[in-house]
Length: 157
Image: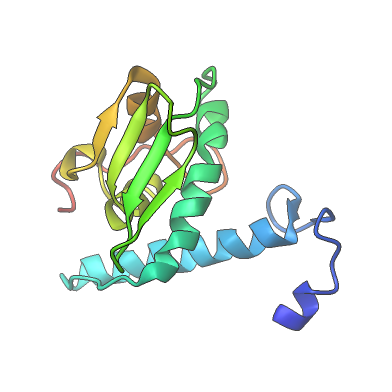
């Protein structure tokens, strides 16, 4: 797959089952799906997943789909918050403007669980500052299609 991917122009959009996507986004979306559906298996068997820093790809995809979440819900897209997350390896990863008024911070794992709708924001220790950031965390969605309802609080802890 890597060899085939290298034959595509990075700006070229690929037709597939959903809306056309650049090859890098197409691979990122598939990686996100493997991670989040894998989480469903961990949850089914009550096993705590041990994540590695490769979760960054899922988190990055979650950040990049912020506009999508607002668009599919018919909402105006507010100014992007700063997102600052601790990685499993102990680094701190940042997205957005460090001077942003609105912020989200916590662990990469919890952020990934929220944006993939595997956890309700209320079931995490993520710190969310600002109305736009708070709204995003209640509608965050990385899976294509119409808007989905996130899990209710307490469903999967």
